[in-house]
Length: 95
Picture 1 (cartoon, helix red, strand yellow):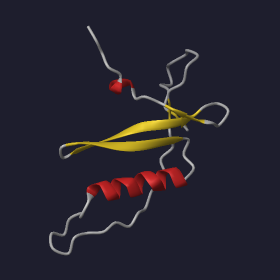
Picture 2 (cartoon, one colour; picture 1 turned 90 degrees about the vertical axis):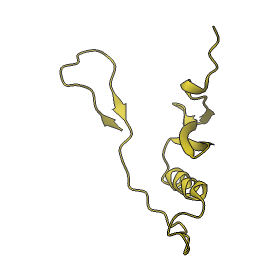
Picture 3 (tube, helix red, strand yellow; picture 1 turned 120 degrees about the vertical axis):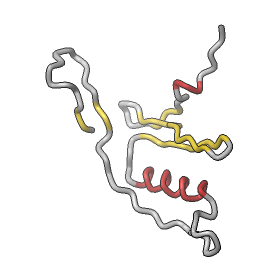
Picture 4 (cartoon, one colour; picture 1 turned 180 degrees about the horizontal axis):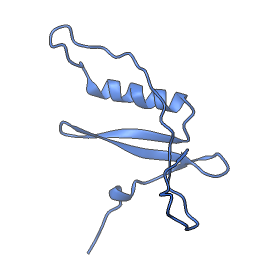
C-alpha cells in the first residue's frame, strides 16, 4: 500500500491506495481486423493475472453494450479470508 495522505492532514485516518504493479498478458489479435477478437477474453486475462500476483482483492467485469466496467467482487478481511462485496454503486436506491 502507498500512503497518499496529504502532509498537512493531522487526523487519525490515512489515504491508502494499492501499490502499482505491472501486469503482462498475451492476447489474440484478429489477423483480419488487427483488433481484439474478443475484448472480454483480454479483460479476463488481466483480471486473472491480477489475482495470480496475490493482490488482496478480486475483480470481475460487467458489460453494458460496448462499455466494460471493472468492479470488485471479493476483498480479504483482516484475517486474510476472502469476503464477497457489493460495490457501492450497485446497491439499489429507492425513494
